[in-house]
Image (cartoon, rainbow, N blue to C red; front, side, top):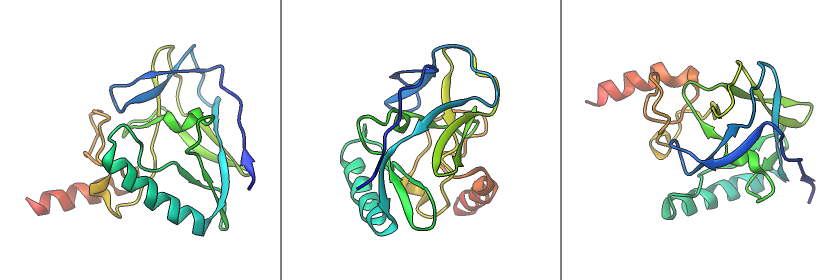
Amino acid sequence: MKKRVVKNSPFIKFKSSKIHNQGGFASKDIKKGTKIIEYGGKIITKKESEKLAEKQFEKSKKNKKEGAVYIFELNKRYDIDGNVSWNKARLLNHSCEPNSESVNDNGHIWIISTKNIKKGEEITYDYGYSMDDYKNHPCKCSSKNCVGYIVAKKYRKRLLKKIENLK
């Protein structure tokens, strides 16, 4: 099994977060466009990924401090299982108003700042989840544009309509 081992980032310190459990916070000012941290882990097949995601999700239901999913798509055949202790990027939280984004740069998943980030600010990105099983992924980011669930920006209006129709 291959691993994508990554170095610690000089831009982040990890501590308690108001969003969820722990989070990554800027240890110094970060300029827009900076590669903040690489998302590492074990390189696994799509089949392994499906099994692991299901297992991790069940585990997270029992222990609320556990994250639900730590898997990133690498390409059509492989994913990265980021649920390893040496992958600190797994601790970064979702926000509906993120200051970073995830980018696949030639098989390396980077969290890159989309704006200038001040020292002490929590580093967040949009997890990009689809609307499938949205109820299983409540959002606690508390941003003014939060829809209450972790879904990609492109689904938020549709989700708000769906929620309104359910009332």
